[in-house]
Length: 328
Image 1 (cartoon, rainbow, N blue to C red):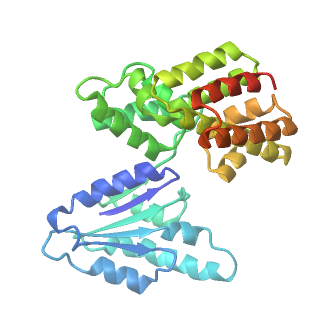
Image 2: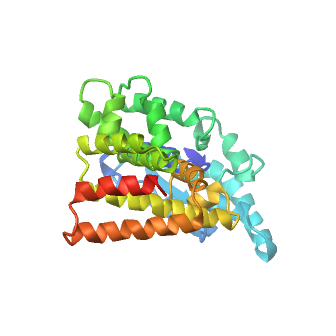
Image 3: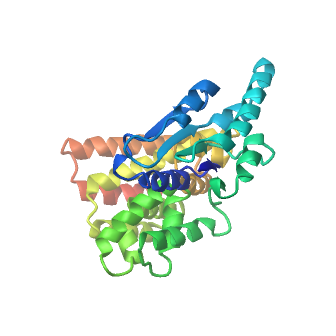
């Protein structure tokens, strides 16, 4: 069987590859090999693909980014890489039936690629599968979460998928991990929005954002209500202060990067933050000048030192801090 897994959805690709590897059975370690397609040569590829399975019935050869590397070739190496593609498009039809040859590509390969065309024409012996990451728009993430939860055997009440999409964004591997944790906690019953609020750290981050938002809008009562809610959920005062410091540090960073002309996606990549976090931060940062944010950050660090050195009681320090920040 010749299979091509390509596209930018790394999580679903890895899950499909894991399922394919599981079909090797108990001798998988003896009959499974991965090769780097960027440095692979035809003789080495053919050597690994032609080797018969040992003890088991099938052998699996996984090649990563061979087509991606050859498709994007330019300059003097282009002719040699085109020759490789032509050889490979002819060779796939002669791969032994006991070998599963799998190409895993980090990008989407054009349909005109000769190897894509050759594998597509193999009938039952060939499969070309595209894995595209769901968009953050149009409810695609929510649909993916709902489908993935169904595949995992998890029930969810209405609103859970939307909450997870809002808190986590498009990080499918992280969503998968959170779903497994929520399933374990919920047991036989469906996962509830309350479960998400209690167990998903991004939900608490969202509440911290809401508190910072209230501070930015000079809504002191709302800020105190959210602070009390977080305390009732068991959040330690130093944890809350740490999160407040983190959020204002994010506001300061996105304020500076936005002033440099960088867009939301670029800022998220630069700071390694969830796009949802950056979007909220950009909105909140507009309510402050750069000098205000620098002053607030200095004050937060001073409060942190005062608490840790015993100069102020933690909860009292937080209450005073909320009043001060609301008056900035």
